Length: 225
Image (cartoon, rainbow, N blue to C red; front, side, top):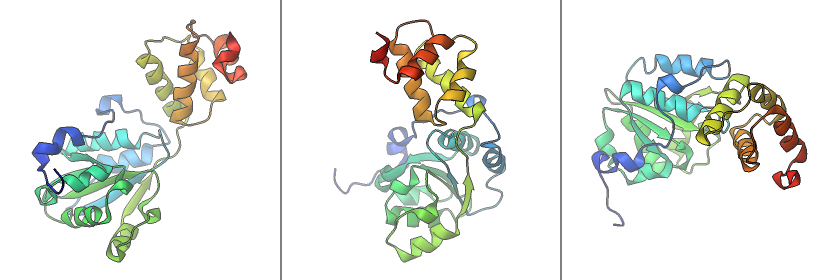
């Protein structure tokens, strides 16, 4: 119903970020080691706000979900946060993924609520909060003051983990040398990894290094037939 504000209990399930959870499945590498180390011990005092930023597929949402699981934070996603009763968040840690999509007023109040005892706010986005377009001057100054921890683009370790996950999702077991071959050939992005796995799957053939080479060289799976 338009204008109706819901409680955290009413919105908890649909607002949970759709990201992998669990420290056991998070892969640490030089690309994310600093951010992971920071979140291992954060927040170390009351009223803290921090942002984790990085390119698509770098693992920032997964890392943030591990943090939320550890501290018992409520995980919200982007503009959906504007539909929640913000006062119900006072005194508890909050994870806001795709944070730049939240409205100015929502962000402003979430940052203020994080100052209460037991509060903390972790923002997750691709660009740094300093680059977000906002209209409220008071919000601009608060975003500019937030501590930002960056995660680099996927390195070999992360890219290999992404490829293994995408293959597993399609119940594909590639030959042993395929992963190492692919990480040398494809762009360093989650999108590129997903794309090449999808193209290999479309061949309906055992995934070997020669097939991977053929798919990458062809550029289009239709060229294989």
